[in-house]
Image (cartoon, rainbow, N blue to C red; front, side, top):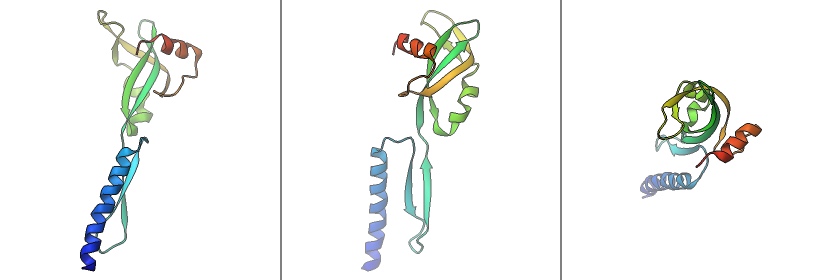
Length: 126
């Protein structure tokens, strides 16, 4: 009977951790589970989530704008390389222009450091 209780307890603890983790609003979370019933070793699994970013960019041919993007947590360091060359539309009627240079990127909730980026963000419809 004691063995069955441990077997039932392990999935309950794991499901409780999963529920608590899904409620959390952090960038990443970890789930700890028993590797096997006979050992006390634990394994970690870190699950990345998409991060919302906003970037002050310069376009080929001139012009600046604020570009919004979602990027996986593991690719955040490569964001500049990913964005350069991507095409963005200024209006629904105009043709797309490619991004030439990334001036500044921050998390969506954070404030830009540069004054020009702050003003562009205030002027950008959301």
